[in-house]
Image (cartoon, rainbow, N blue to C red; front, side):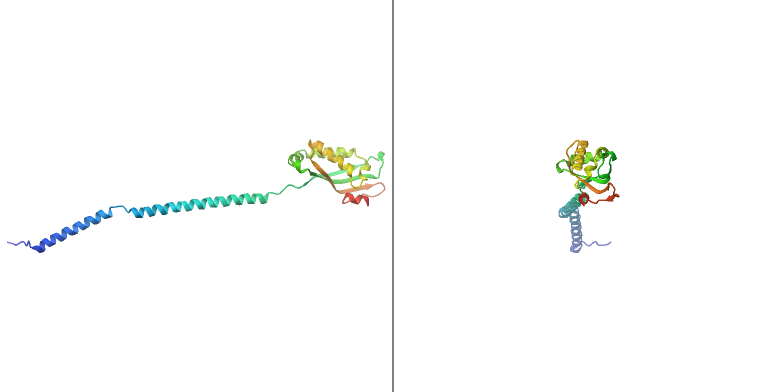
Length: 199
């Protein structure tokens, strides 16, 4: 018959085993508790990154908008101050007499600043009608109109005719360039400016 030892050592062993079991239980309980401190920092970092991305997006869009507006202003070219109406000719009536038999020139107009916003699109829309009325006026002109070096009377008539066709007083000046005149008994000669006619 075997003898079972029930001494202090055995009891101690049993106590030790119970102690270990108690510690394991405590560890399992501790690991089951959520880490509140770590969760706070992870949420803070996540929100901080979202804020950085949002600020960067706004900055990029703002920069693109400013660049687009700036480039748009650079690309906008102001319209020319003087508008070309084309080439025109004058043929004198031989029965009327006079020194000038033939004249050919380019015609330009400068618009009044106050009326330019209305007159410029209207002139563009009625350009051929303006040209037709100028040609009709030149058919009624006289050789003596080209004897004046400054062509003052002819310019006045042209200015009034253009304003009438446009339906608004808009023309500030009439400019004649590339004038070529054929005088009685002289070959046709180019005149670069109206001031050269007097020479």
